Length: 173
Image (cartoon, rainbow, N blue to C red; front, side):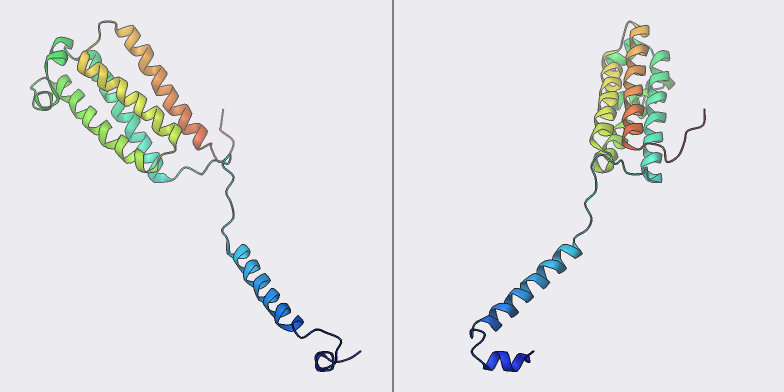
C-alpha cells in the first residue's frame, strides 16, 4: 500500500481530488454540527406540564368568575342595567360594586392569559369573561338560564385547562 504523498505525487489521482475531498469533508462536518446542535422537536400532541404560575392564574380566574356569578344573583338587575362601570365601582351597593370589581379583575386576568395560556384555554376564558360582561351590563331576567349558561362556559374552561395540561399521575377516585 502506498502512502498519501506517493499517491499525490504519482499520476494515480487527479490534481483536483484533494481540494474537492477537503471541501466535501468540511461541508459534511458543518452540516453534521448544525443538525446535532438543533433543539429537539416537540410533539404538538404532548401537553406541557402545568406551571405553578399558570395554575395560580387559572385559579384566580375561576375565583373571580365565581365571585361575579354569585354577586350577579344578588344584585339589583335594574341598577346593573343603568350603571356604567365607573359608577358601579363607586356604588354603595355591595353587590353592584363587587360585580364591577370582578369584571375589572377578570379583564386583567384574561390579559395575562393572552401572554401565556394555550389557545383553547384562552378561547374558553374569553368566552366566559364575555358572557359575564354581557350579563353584568345587560342584566338577565331568567336566572335559571343564566346559571346553566354560566356553568356550561365554566365547564368548557376547566375542560380546556385539563386537556392542555393533563394530570401528571393517576387521579384518585
